[in-house]
Length: 160
Figure 1 (cartoon, rainbow, N blue to C red):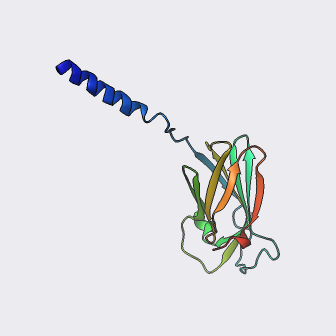
Figure 2 (figure 1 turned 120 degrees about the horizontal axis):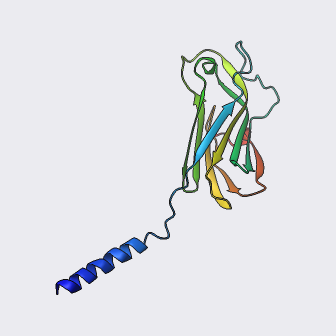
Figure 3 (figure 1 turned 180 degrees about the horizontal axis):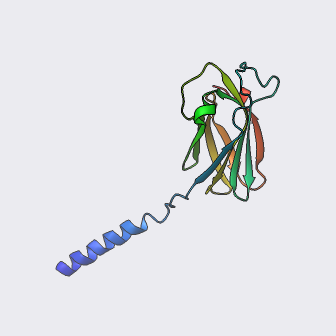
């Protein structure tokens, strides 16, 4: 009787171990973030970019997904504390938030010409949803991460 119980328990453990085979471990996602800093040293108006459109470009590269933001307006506190990028990936959802790091909120805005984040570790030929916030919140952006990806979104059309 004891031998049958041992075989039964071994079978349950074996089945339990096999049920996880279809679950793939999370890939290690890494981010390299760069930005052009404040475009002006003095106070600027909110329309400092004039006719230039705020854009977000998603591009496939050999190093990973290159996310490029152009024409952002952030508080002048970035001249003291910088800009931070928080990015996380949960299955097919990428959450990206760029913001003023530290320093007191000042009564001026800085035009930031470019911010880039290189995200490695994504799965090729996979559909992703990007939740992006920076100088505002935007509607989710759907894209397929695959060779040849190079799409630019006019963020003025996606502001929530």
